[in-house]
Image (cartoon, rainbow, N blue to C red; front, side, top):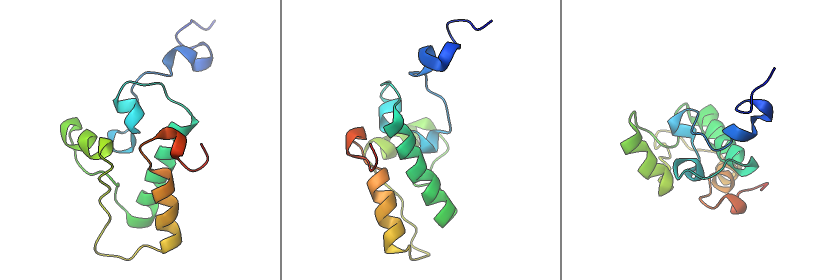
Length: 103
């Protein structure tokens, strides 16, 4: 039998889970998750697939979270990213959840 904490996941939507380098700003600011939150993470995943690194580097919350909240994407200088891929990432990693591509 499911308890209220796990039933449908509704009670867990506002909890902070996941890898800090992929967290959307609304999750860091303790707001609820939405499909737009997943779109942010998708942008981070595409960035990682193309470059081999995360868009917001660091190993501690206090260094990574300000970069996320200020959208300080660390584009690699060692390679040129296809303009179409960069445009897709730029449209997914947007601070306002409602302005993200697909939201």
